[in-house]
Amino acid sequence: MPETYNQATSSESLRVPRRRWAIACLLGFGVLVNYFDRVNLSVSREALETSFGISAVMFGYLSSAYNWTYAALQLPSGLLLDRFGVRRVGYVSTVLWSVASFAAAAATGVRGFFSARLLLGIGEAPTFPANAKAVGYWFPSFERSLATAIFDAMAKFSSAVGVPMLGFLVVHFGWRWSFASTGFISILFFILFFAFYRNPSAAKGLSETERQYIKKGGAQPEDIVRAAKGAPLFYLLGQKRVYGLALGFAGYNYTFYLLLTWLPSYFLAAHHVDLLQSTFYTSVPWLFATLTDLVIGGWLVDWLIQRGWNAVRVRQVVIIGGTFLGLGILGAATAQTAAGALVWISISIGGLSAASPIGWSIPSLIAPKESVGTVGGILNFSNQLAAIAAPIVTGYVVQITHSFAWAFVTATAVLLMSIGAYIFLLGNMEPVPEPA
Image (cartoon, rainbow, N blue to C red; front, side):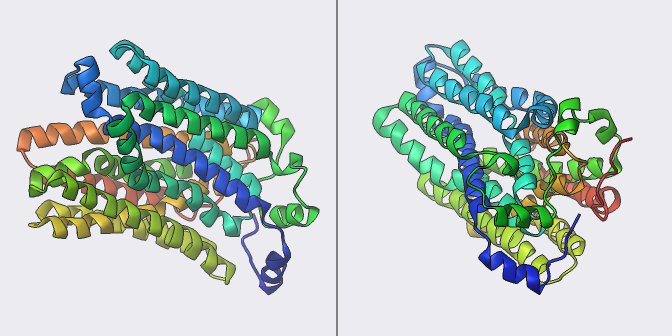
């Protein structure tokens, strides 16, 4: 797969139309909608408890319902993406998650709401594997980190903007309108996706200049014959590099979901700040993470590769170095002030977020033809197991020790495992050989 980017290529890129970047922004908007759906439940917690009379334990089950179906469908969604394509799977996916948002808004009891969250997990399951596959089709390998960062950063940015926006709706219009609003935004995304997304081979508005630029730059080739046969799941499950990527990225997601679900409670309980201060301390790390995701994991990586730096070494340094910075969460375990904890947590999630676009770009770099969706599904299945484990393990640790310190120590141990997986299993990121 071509990784070289010489002066002639640089000059050519200035003349090439940029339709592919509109595709990246479209994918990013889809992820933003997805994460609004996830944030929505935590914002509406008190209102739901009042409406349905649910306990904290029942709210925990409602919170986990999404992740169970989402995790269970990662491997099947990867296979479906490789067989039926990003466009067709994307239609069905978006309709399902839109229906789930409106179903939650209309729920008259806990059972109906629980079912809506299960359906939401089903609908959103293909999103990240589909985006990885789409980026593989649409982008040269030396532009893929920034393209991936555009959609990956929206997972962080959604927490920064979604909480105040959805909170405003809950306070002034009620929790039902909060969920209905994400349904309307989902319909808007469906219209945009239907109108604009095609694979490069079928995109009528794509100029021949840009089409050849993408192809010569090492984009994943579209192979209709291979896609019709289905992706070789068991072959991929036997590949060391696939395991290295999945185990390595699981450490990122464990810490990500620990902070996503417990960070406000940590500042309230450990540093005794008020609710307004907790909101500030929670939003700052996510804004910093959005910045490092786009600038370091996206723009800087592509900029270095385009100027002749060894592509493998650049990606290794960023993904391993970013995960190493994630160990900064250990500093929060001993922080004596909220400001000190904020610095350590920002270093941790900032480093991990810089590594994240590299992780999501690797499936399109190492997968055999028409298997990116399946590799992405394997990757996200591992991610979601970590996402399920992180809030549960943290809850037990905090309950037993009455402190968040050991929860952060646990995350540190998981991140050390990730670093080992990247070094000894993923290695030099060579493409997985085509199956016989």
